[in-house]
Length: 392
Image (cartoon, rainbow, N blue to C red; front, side):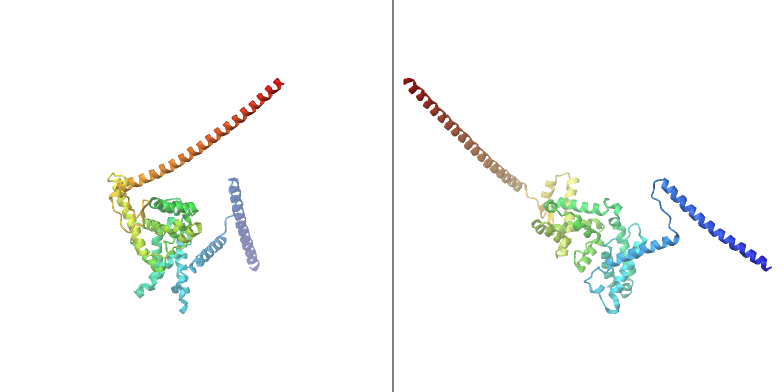
């Protein structure tokens, strides 16, 4: 009986060993076939990862993502006591909440993933919600921030997707739309910025990806966002606000070189935000009125600009200061003065040309006369000499 049990045990162990070897051989065959097939198709050979290796790779990617988020989070509103409060380590706990929000959102939205600038949006939302007057609501600030952040990204997610950069809703498309609007209403500033070498992406990428949260103090950012979230077209809102920001500092920009202009646009100077928002809205309303008058009323742009009074808060519109178009009489006088100036310059140039030509002509004539007189004198002397020799 013991011998039979031992034999059975040896047989079972041999069978298990053979099965394991068969599995190993099968894996080798599968891998080698996969490699051979891929190589024949001209694709780079690749050995599939085992489940354990795939788990390790995913864990490594998660750690890299978390590290990337953490580096940006600790730079979010670094001068705000809310995130620096030492009591019970509240500042670090609040930063940790931002990390969790961004990490979970990035894991659930792998088509977009995390992009620098999202931390500025989340940090501002969390600050406002954590200061809610209702204590129960304030305690749920982390969850509410996630929900609001996700709602915002639903509308602006294309800004963070590289494959959609050139689309109208992508980052390059939105920059192009903003610069086209600037060209329409303040071509002088646009040409100056191009002339000194300021590319629109140097400043507008940050403006659009952070919703202008880094251009103003936090109270002004909150005021700005109140207006933006109440707008039915957030993309248009940002576009007109951005163009108005450039036009508000146009005098400084027109006087500046590359470094001065870049400094102004990347570190926007303090301003009255309410007036800025009023000017932005006025520009949108005035442009809508002019467009409607031209398209529906069938009148020319010049006629529309002279017929419709612009709001007083407009900085520039259609290349005109305050959007105010000169009347026909003024335009005629200006055209006449320009014409006279051109004619005067032309006459002066013509007189100078004629005088130079006269001088040249008379100079040549005098030289010709002098050379002729010298030749006649030489000929006369030669004749006198011949006559004197003959007489001898």
